[in-house]
Amino acid sequence: MHGMSTTSPARIRIEIETRYLPEQSQPEAARYAFAYTVRMSHEGGAPARLLDRHWIITDADGHSEEVRGPGVVGQHPRLEPGESFQYTSGAVLRTPVGQMSGSYGWQTDDDEHFRSPIDGFVLSMPRVLH
Image 1 (cartoon, rainbow, N blue to C red):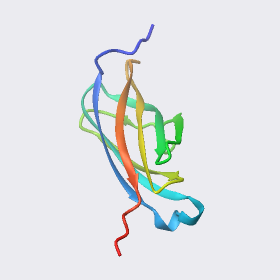
Image 2: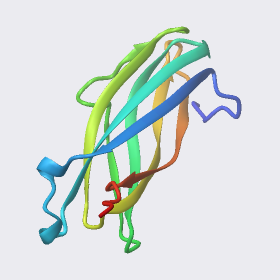
Image 3: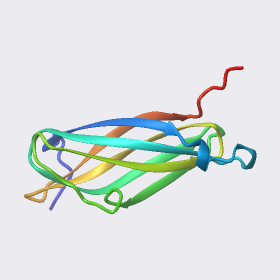
Image 4: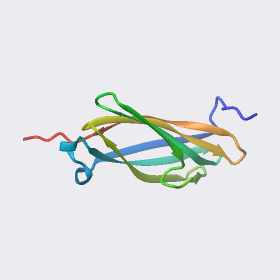
């Protein structure tokens, strides 16, 4: 039986940068588009392949949307210690500010499964100063 191990077989560090996409946004139609770039770095332990992603996207009105799917940007990167993988994706909110959090699911070469949590981060339209 494959259970979730209490100690993760690999240490994966996740860093995220976000930016607002004015050219893809229509504030008058309650459409605010954001890009987020994720960099995942393998900092030690067993080599692991990314299996799936799970996001919770919450807008300023408290509406939450869950996104689950295989891989990221159509890929299932396999990371050895010292390696990293970076990708950019996007999210559209109905409010100018929101938050995303979630986790990635991984599988080691010897079939151990674990998840790496993604702490909540803010998507925010830049404040306009007059």
